[in-house]
Image (spheres, rainbow, N blue to C red):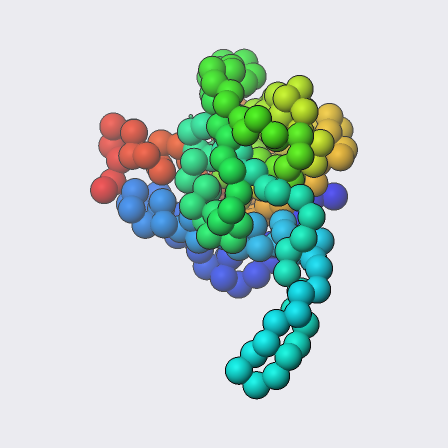
Length: 212
Ligand code: PRP
Ligand code: URA
């Protein structure tokens, strides 16, 4: 089962992302903010350990993160928009990159880049991409991560379609999915409805009629 953030702050920020009149700067900033909130939820079960410290008042014990090192892996391009927000939560993480784009007709992913930390198998991996539509890109990226030895993967997105969640769960039941929101479905072109349009184009301002 995907974990979905039900929160007024997320609802408010999603209205900004969905609005076609939101410009590039605010869109990018809002993607980053929501990513931070998704990461907060996706790290809820990270193991902790006790350490003794001294406050200005007395000695005490605190819970700090323990266990595995982490890696953030954005699916290019749109996943790059989530990296800063995730790193704000897990600043020591290493960063890998997986380059994929959807073939516009088949909607199947086309691979063009993969560079991962050498010790990816020892790390807790946060695979990030704002859009989970058919699920083809996420499934392909997870397969590539596993082929490189990754054993502990979480997939973080902002908008998910039910069919995409189902595809990831079927193909990779060991990979939990975290989404800010789940939308109604896909249109005939494979875009999420109501969605927010082409996330990569909106983050990078690459559409000819982009509002700045
Ligand atoms: C978008 C998005 C995902 C993919 C989701 O990327 O960022 O990677 O589509 O669709 P899917 O679940 O049906 O595979 P796109 O192909 O537009 O590439 P871009 O990020 O470079 O714009
Ligand atoms: N990729 C996007 O950027 N948006 C969608 O709605 C679907 C795939």
